[in-house]
Length: 305
Image (cartoon, rainbow, N blue to C red):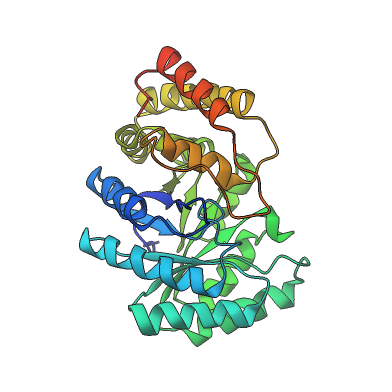
Protein backbone atom coordinates (compact mmCIF):
# COMPACT_ATOMS: atom_id res chain seq x y z
CA UNK A 1 0.00 0.00 0.00
CA UNK A 2 1.29 3.46 -0.88
CA UNK A 3 2.20 5.58 2.12
CA UNK A 4 0.46 8.92 2.58
CA UNK A 5 3.72 10.58 3.65
CA UNK A 6 7.31 10.11 2.52
CA UNK A 7 9.89 8.38 4.70
CA UNK A 8 12.85 10.40 5.91
CA UNK A 9 14.66 11.62 8.99
CA UNK A 10 12.33 13.49 11.36
CA UNK A 11 14.23 15.81 13.71
CA UNK A 12 13.24 18.35 16.33
CA UNK A 13 14.05 22.01 16.68
CA UNK A 14 14.72 23.06 20.27
CA UNK A 15 14.11 26.58 21.53
CA UNK A 16 16.91 28.77 22.97
CA UNK A 17 15.78 30.96 25.87
CA UNK A 18 17.61 34.04 27.10
CA UNK A 19 18.20 34.55 30.82
CA UNK A 20 14.89 36.46 30.80
CA UNK A 21 13.14 33.50 29.18
CA UNK A 22 12.65 35.26 25.87
CA UNK A 23 13.32 33.63 22.51
CA UNK A 24 16.93 34.10 21.37
CA UNK A 25 15.90 34.66 17.76
CA UNK A 26 19.41 34.79 16.32
CA UNK A 27 20.41 31.41 17.76
CA UNK A 28 17.05 29.94 16.80
CA UNK A 29 17.39 30.99 13.17
CA UNK A 30 20.99 29.72 13.08
CA UNK A 31 19.89 26.34 14.47
CA UNK A 32 17.23 25.87 11.80
CA UNK A 33 19.49 27.01 8.94
CA UNK A 34 22.32 24.76 10.14
CA UNK A 35 20.15 21.65 10.28
CA UNK A 36 18.59 22.36 6.90
CA UNK A 37 22.04 22.98 5.47
CA UNK A 38 23.19 19.59 6.76
CA UNK A 39 20.44 17.88 4.73
CA UNK A 40 17.76 17.40 7.39
CA UNK A 41 14.55 18.44 5.64
CA UNK A 42 11.85 17.13 7.99
CA UNK A 43 12.17 19.50 10.92
CA UNK A 44 9.43 20.14 13.44
CA UNK A 45 8.91 22.46 16.38
CA UNK A 46 6.88 22.16 19.60
CA UNK A 47 7.13 18.47 20.37
CA UNK A 48 8.26 17.59 23.90
CA UNK A 49 11.85 18.52 22.98
CA UNK A 50 10.64 21.87 21.66
CA UNK A 51 8.70 22.53 24.89
CA UNK A 52 5.38 22.60 23.08
CA UNK A 53 3.74 21.59 26.36
CA UNK A 54 4.99 24.74 28.11
CA UNK A 55 4.65 27.71 25.73
CA UNK A 56 1.83 30.21 26.10
CA UNK A 57 -0.09 31.59 23.14
CA UNK A 58 2.19 34.60 22.65
CA UNK A 59 5.30 32.43 22.70
CA UNK A 60 3.69 29.90 20.39
CA UNK A 61 2.79 32.55 17.84
CA UNK A 62 6.14 34.37 17.87
CA UNK A 63 8.26 31.20 17.70
CA UNK A 64 6.03 29.69 15.01
CA UNK A 65 6.41 32.82 12.86
CA UNK A 66 10.20 32.73 13.04
CA UNK A 67 10.37 28.95 12.54
CA UNK A 68 8.06 28.95 9.51
CA UNK A 69 9.93 31.83 7.88
CA UNK A 70 13.34 30.18 8.35
CA UNK A 71 12.23 26.71 7.23
CA UNK A 72 10.64 28.10 4.10
CA UNK A 73 13.74 30.20 3.41
CA UNK A 74 15.65 26.91 3.40
CA UNK A 75 13.25 25.37 0.89
CA UNK A 76 11.56 22.93 3.28
CA UNK A 77 8.01 22.40 4.52
CA UNK A 78 7.34 23.45 8.14
CA UNK A 79 5.69 21.07 10.61
CA UNK A 80 4.20 22.73 13.67
CA UNK A 81 3.44 20.72 16.80
CA UNK A 82 0.46 21.49 19.03
CA UNK A 83 0.26 20.18 22.60
CA UNK A 84 -2.39 21.23 25.09
CA UNK A 85 -4.80 19.91 27.68
CA UNK A 86 -7.50 21.91 25.90
CA UNK A 87 -8.94 20.70 22.61
CA UNK A 88 -10.18 24.24 21.99
CA UNK A 89 -6.62 25.58 22.36
CA UNK A 90 -5.34 22.91 19.98
CA UNK A 91 -7.90 23.93 17.38
CA UNK A 92 -7.16 27.64 17.85
CA UNK A 93 -3.40 27.18 17.48
CA UNK A 94 -3.80 25.08 14.34
CA UNK A 95 -6.13 27.72 12.93
CA UNK A 96 -3.57 30.45 13.65
CA UNK A 97 -0.72 28.58 12.00
CA UNK A 98 -2.85 27.66 8.99
CA UNK A 99 -4.62 30.98 8.46
CA UNK A 100 -1.83 33.38 9.46
CA UNK A 101 1.28 31.46 8.44
CA UNK A 102 0.05 29.13 5.71
CA UNK A 103 1.14 25.96 7.53
CA UNK A 104 -0.43 22.77 6.23
CA UNK A 105 1.50 20.12 8.18
CA UNK A 106 0.93 19.57 11.90
CA UNK A 107 1.98 17.27 14.70
CA UNK A 108 -0.66 16.60 17.34
CA UNK A 109 -0.97 14.53 20.51
CA UNK A 110 -3.86 13.56 22.76
CA UNK A 111 -4.81 15.78 25.73
CA UNK A 112 -3.08 14.28 28.75
CA UNK A 113 -4.91 15.26 31.95
CA UNK A 114 -6.77 11.96 31.89
CA UNK A 115 -6.53 8.89 29.68
CA UNK A 116 -9.09 9.17 26.87
CA UNK A 117 -11.53 6.34 26.29
CA UNK A 118 -11.86 4.85 22.81
CA UNK A 119 -14.85 6.99 21.86
CA UNK A 120 -13.05 10.08 23.19
CA UNK A 121 -10.01 9.29 21.05
CA UNK A 122 -12.22 9.09 17.98
CA UNK A 123 -13.93 12.32 19.01
CA UNK A 124 -10.58 14.08 19.33
CA UNK A 125 -9.42 13.02 15.86
CA UNK A 126 -12.83 13.70 14.31
CA UNK A 127 -12.77 17.24 15.69
CA UNK A 128 -9.20 18.09 14.67
CA UNK A 129 -8.93 16.26 11.37
CA UNK A 130 -12.47 17.07 10.36
CA UNK A 131 -12.03 20.78 11.04
CA UNK A 132 -8.82 21.06 8.98
CA UNK A 133 -9.37 18.83 5.99
CA UNK A 134 -6.94 20.93 3.92
CA UNK A 135 -4.07 20.07 6.29
CA UNK A 136 -2.05 16.93 6.97
CA UNK A 137 -1.40 15.52 10.43
CA UNK A 138 1.22 13.39 12.13
CA UNK A 139 0.13 11.92 15.46
CA UNK A 140 2.69 12.00 18.27
CA UNK A 141 1.92 8.80 20.20
CA UNK A 142 3.41 8.76 23.69
CA UNK A 143 2.65 7.50 27.17
CA UNK A 144 2.70 11.02 28.62
CA UNK A 145 -0.88 11.18 27.27
CA UNK A 146 -1.65 8.18 29.55
CA UNK A 147 -2.67 5.93 26.67
CA UNK A 148 -1.29 4.85 23.31
CA UNK A 149 -3.30 4.79 20.12
CA UNK A 150 -3.25 1.24 18.72
CA UNK A 151 -2.60 0.20 15.14
CA UNK A 152 -6.24 -0.87 14.81
CA UNK A 153 -7.43 2.55 16.01
CA UNK A 154 -5.06 4.25 13.57
CA UNK A 155 -6.40 2.20 10.67
CA UNK A 156 -10.01 3.02 11.54
CA UNK A 157 -9.29 6.74 11.93
CA UNK A 158 -7.21 6.83 8.74
CA UNK A 159 -10.05 5.24 6.78
CA UNK A 160 -12.31 8.08 7.90
CA UNK A 161 -9.73 10.84 7.57
CA UNK A 162 -7.28 10.79 4.64
CA UNK A 163 -5.43 13.76 6.17
CA UNK A 164 -3.99 11.57 8.93
CA UNK A 165 -0.72 10.71 7.20
CA UNK A 166 1.89 9.66 9.76
CA UNK A 167 2.69 8.71 13.34
CA UNK A 168 5.62 9.23 15.69
CA UNK A 169 6.32 6.35 18.08
CA UNK A 170 9.23 5.88 20.47
CA UNK A 171 9.22 2.13 20.99
CA UNK A 172 11.52 -0.84 20.56
CA UNK A 173 8.73 -3.38 21.10
CA UNK A 174 8.91 -5.73 18.13
CA UNK A 175 5.25 -6.67 18.57
CA UNK A 176 4.08 -3.07 18.57
CA UNK A 177 6.26 -2.17 15.59
CA UNK A 178 4.88 -5.06 13.55
CA UNK A 179 1.33 -4.07 14.50
CA UNK A 180 1.94 -0.50 13.32
CA UNK A 181 3.51 -1.47 10.01
CA UNK A 182 1.07 -4.27 9.21
CA UNK A 183 -2.06 -2.87 10.85
CA UNK A 184 -1.92 0.72 9.55
CA UNK A 185 0.16 0.42 6.37
CA UNK A 186 -1.21 3.60 4.77
CA UNK A 187 0.49 5.73 7.44
CA UNK A 188 4.17 6.53 7.56
CA UNK A 189 5.51 5.47 10.96
CA UNK A 190 8.50 7.36 12.33
CA UNK A 191 10.35 5.30 14.93
CA UNK A 192 13.28 6.06 17.21
CA UNK A 193 16.70 4.62 16.48
CA UNK A 194 16.29 1.17 18.00
CA UNK A 195 12.72 0.75 16.75
CA UNK A 196 13.76 1.89 13.27
CA UNK A 197 16.48 -0.76 13.09
CA UNK A 198 13.91 -3.53 13.62
CA UNK A 199 11.14 -1.92 11.59
CA UNK A 200 13.44 -1.64 8.57
CA UNK A 201 13.37 -5.42 8.31
CA UNK A 202 9.60 -5.38 7.94
CA UNK A 203 8.72 -2.49 5.67
CA UNK A 204 9.12 1.19 4.90
CA UNK A 205 9.35 3.52 7.87
CA UNK A 206 10.87 6.84 8.88
CA UNK A 207 13.57 7.58 11.43
CA UNK A 208 12.68 9.68 14.45
CA UNK A 209 16.15 10.98 15.20
CA UNK A 210 16.90 11.78 18.82
CA UNK A 211 20.32 10.52 19.94
CA UNK A 212 21.37 10.22 16.28
CA UNK A 213 21.26 14.01 16.02
CA UNK A 214 24.68 13.94 17.73
CA UNK A 215 25.94 13.90 14.16
CA UNK A 216 23.55 14.95 11.41
CA UNK A 217 25.42 13.23 8.59
CA UNK A 218 25.53 9.96 10.49
CA UNK A 219 21.80 10.28 11.24
CA UNK A 220 21.17 10.48 7.50
CA UNK A 221 23.52 7.54 6.96
CA UNK A 222 21.62 5.56 9.60
CA UNK A 223 18.35 6.20 7.80
CA UNK A 224 19.76 5.27 4.39
CA UNK A 225 21.24 2.05 5.75
CA UNK A 226 17.88 1.04 7.17
CA UNK A 227 15.90 2.11 4.13
CA UNK A 228 18.10 0.01 1.83
CA UNK A 229 18.35 -2.80 4.41
CA UNK A 230 22.12 -2.63 4.65
CA UNK A 231 22.08 -4.39 8.01
CA UNK A 232 25.84 -4.84 8.14
CA UNK A 233 26.05 -1.04 8.27
CA UNK A 234 22.90 -0.29 10.27
CA UNK A 235 23.39 -2.68 13.17
CA UNK A 236 26.90 -1.52 14.14
CA UNK A 237 25.61 2.08 14.12
CA UNK A 238 22.70 1.03 16.34
CA UNK A 239 25.13 -0.67 18.71
CA UNK A 240 27.21 2.50 18.95
CA UNK A 241 24.12 4.59 19.70
CA UNK A 242 23.00 2.12 22.34
CA UNK A 243 26.32 2.45 24.15
CA UNK A 244 26.30 6.23 23.80
CA UNK A 245 22.74 6.35 25.14
CA UNK A 246 23.78 4.47 28.27
CA UNK A 247 26.67 6.88 28.79
CA UNK A 248 24.39 9.88 28.25
CA UNK A 249 22.12 8.90 31.15
CA UNK A 250 25.16 8.08 33.28
CA UNK A 251 26.68 11.53 32.74
CA UNK A 252 23.50 13.61 32.55
CA UNK A 253 21.37 11.70 35.04
CA UNK A 254 17.81 10.41 34.73
CA UNK A 255 14.45 11.98 35.45
CA UNK A 256 14.74 15.12 33.32
CA UNK A 257 12.05 15.92 30.80
CA UNK A 258 13.05 15.06 27.22
CA UNK A 259 13.77 18.65 26.26
CA UNK A 260 16.68 18.80 28.71
CA UNK A 261 18.56 16.03 26.90
CA UNK A 262 17.69 17.34 23.44
CA UNK A 263 19.12 20.75 24.31
CA UNK A 264 22.39 19.10 25.29
CA UNK A 265 22.43 17.24 21.96
CA UNK A 266 22.10 20.52 20.09
CA UNK A 267 24.55 22.29 22.45
CA UNK A 268 27.15 19.79 21.25
CA UNK A 269 26.82 21.41 17.81
CA UNK A 270 26.85 24.99 19.10
CA UNK A 271 28.08 25.68 22.62
CA UNK A 272 26.54 29.16 22.55
CA UNK A 273 23.16 27.44 22.88
CA UNK A 274 21.58 27.81 26.37
CA UNK A 275 20.47 24.67 28.19
CA UNK A 276 17.73 26.36 30.23
CA UNK A 277 14.11 25.19 30.04
CA UNK A 278 10.88 27.03 30.70
CA UNK A 279 9.96 26.67 34.36
CA UNK A 280 9.19 24.61 36.34
CA UNK A 281 11.36 22.03 34.54
CA UNK A 282 15.04 21.75 35.44
CA UNK A 283 17.79 21.91 32.86
CA UNK A 284 20.95 19.81 32.85
CA UNK A 285 23.98 21.43 34.45
CA UNK A 286 26.68 22.68 32.09
CA UNK A 287 29.30 20.68 34.01
CA UNK A 288 27.47 17.42 33.30
CA UNK A 289 27.03 18.31 29.63
CA UNK A 290 30.74 19.10 29.36
CA UNK A 291 31.68 15.76 30.93
CA UNK A 292 29.50 13.92 28.42
CA UNK A 293 30.97 15.95 25.53
CA UNK A 294 34.51 15.10 26.58
CA UNK A 295 33.68 11.40 26.95
CA UNK A 296 32.03 11.34 23.52
CA UNK A 297 35.03 12.96 21.86
CA UNK A 298 37.35 10.38 23.43
CA UNK A 299 35.18 7.30 22.96
CA UNK A 300 33.21 7.96 19.76
CA UNK A 301 34.85 10.84 17.89
CA UNK A 302 32.97 9.87 14.73
CA UNK A 303 29.71 10.76 16.49
CA UNK A 304 30.98 14.01 18.01
CA UNK A 305 29.53 17.06 16.24
